[in-house]
Length: 364
Image 1 (cartoon, rainbow, N blue to C red):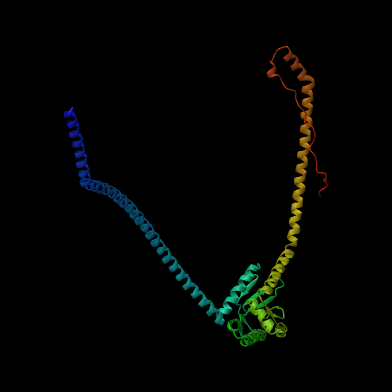
Image 2 (image 1 turned 90 degrees about the vertical axis):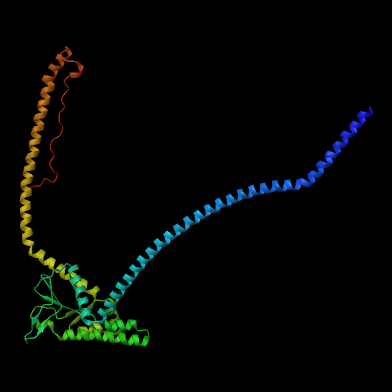
């Protein structure tokens, strides 16, 4: 019994010593073990995180590279388009500047002004239906009784072998200066000078006395064509009696809005003359058409009569069939000569006759 008790005590003591040693060892070794485990775990986690970050960074770098490449491509395309558009704009600006310069020079050059006015008037003549060489001529040179040469801009011929003389004038310079002037007093003075210039052109045109010098039947007045309505109205506004004063010199001032109706009336007069000259031909042609219509009507009447005769003969034949031939065939069919599908049908008569026109008057 003593031995067992001692043995138990020894075992308990051994257990206690083992526990104590284990605790001491745990206290001594656990931090190192935990530290080693934490370090390994941390390294694994950090390695995973690093790889994920690197993968994401590579993906972002690829995306950024692709984005930068696309932006660079778009910038290059935009730069090319911008360069092309800029070149086109510069070219158009140069052309516009050149055209503007030419237009300014034309407005400042009396010769160019006159050429533009004549060109516009000839287009108007053609638009009215007049034909060059027949209804009008340009720059016809005439020799006066004094041996002088005169050359009006346009001759417009009338159906009665007359001539309307038209001379185009383009007094634009003073009007342009007045429009470009900012000072009201200077503007008004230049506009009045412009009106005076228009009147002077009319006086000089009247002094040429075209109506008497060309030796043709012409109206007393010569038409002075002004190619711009604004120029005309501005002159009339500054000089209200401009038309009357020009009229005293046997000159009629006409802007495009007044010129075109005059030309159109001349064209209508030509058409009326042509219609009058062709009246006899029209009458003869009407008689020819009337004679041919009469002949056609007689042919048509014969066709109607022939159709009536054909209908009458057809109906007579149909009656003979129904009364004499058809009953005999039907009796044969009833006797079984033919089946029901191959029986001869009844004939139909034609009703009505050819109808003549209600207005069937005699054609002489």
